[in-house]
Length: 150
Image (tube, rainbow, N blue to C red; front, side, top):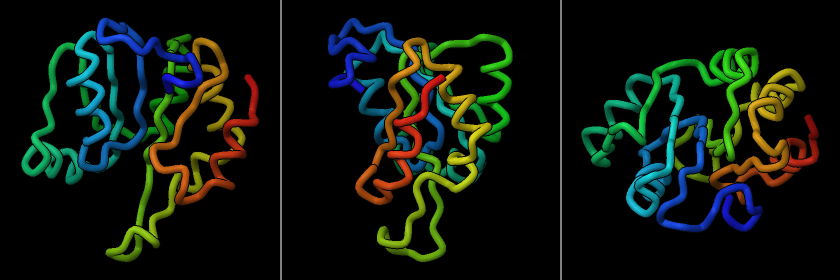
């Protein structure tokens, strides 16, 4: 996100960041703590994940860090349709059928469909920066997204 120059690497950064998927909220918490002026919107489909992040991972919500309980694909389309722009999109919408990290699917297949990739491209202010939190899990999947242009 910072190395692609999509977001200024400064504690005073006021970047507008969209995070699709919450998990434990550690990445978003890191951003909130180190970049307190950054505007972070997290969209999480699972109310259970939101509750777990609050209870066990000390998820903090404030004026600069909000969590929306919604379907990420529907949220993206709505944001694209209204012309909303983000400086960066963090894609952490994953699932697992097992208890081990080797079985995580990231991103969820739906996020690789052309209409969803198009929505992601439309909401990016520069049209060029999207980041999967753990691209080592499925590097081929993220390549499909990063090579798409608006």
